[in-house]
Image 1 (cartoon, rainbow, N blue to C red):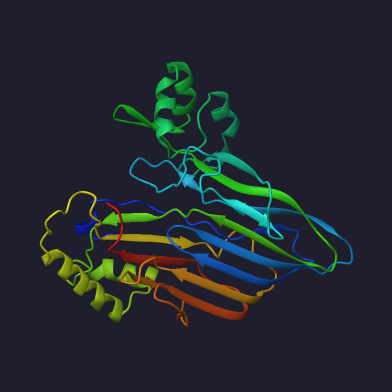
Image 2 (image 1 turned 135 degrees about the vertical axis):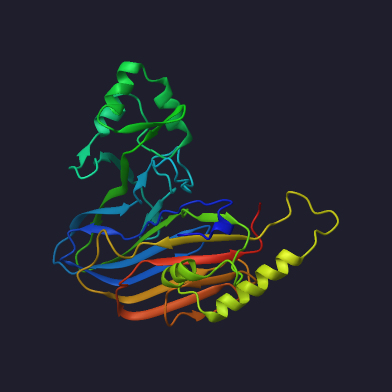
Length: 327
């Protein structure tokens, strides 16, 4: 997301997960797909029918977003110290199931062919996660000879006193699942989303114009009603004087943004028989904008989108202007 200069005080890039992969899918029917999106939790539920005349043992994977270690990218990752960095939990037929995390590191030089460097990093005791506090210390501890094994091919580059990883981490939660012949099964995943944020609200007509406005309109489908409300909110909060007793723990307004990757990864051969999407903005007085034409407000905080025989043709990005966020 491109922020206006006024809102560059703090910027965290978010990473969108989403899209269950089941291999193979030619004998399966997706009866229903239900997605719940909020800044605190994402829940995905798939009701799947095995159309075959025999039981099937399938590989089920939930891909995590790719992570890079760019020096100027401050990425919001809920649990970077864990291979399961979004804290994904899996359930089948209503019961928790065990799943493993597969991780691989890849490097692609400018204009060159991608290669895997997972074993090299593990051999040097370097964390595969390139965006973490541990990576800088691990690279510093290397001997000059071992560090040259990474810097020589360009896997890392120096930035001041630190070394920055330039590889890409690809991860997925994977397990085996038996589907009984002619039966339906409910497969569920929940996780903590990667949520980008920036302090302050800068949606007044002075700051949000031109290319910045066009980007917000394209990504979040902000309309005139949203802009008028955001403009009024920004001006009201800017003019408000601190009240007696306010301190650093007083909630401050923030913009937060997150999303879900419907497109990419594994998709089904046919649309979901029933598709449902719920978006929760957390507080009634928060402002929210997203691209889902036909979504209806069903409560003070929730919006719902329902379709039959439907497959989303784009990912969804959600923008929330949050007056209740902790500083």
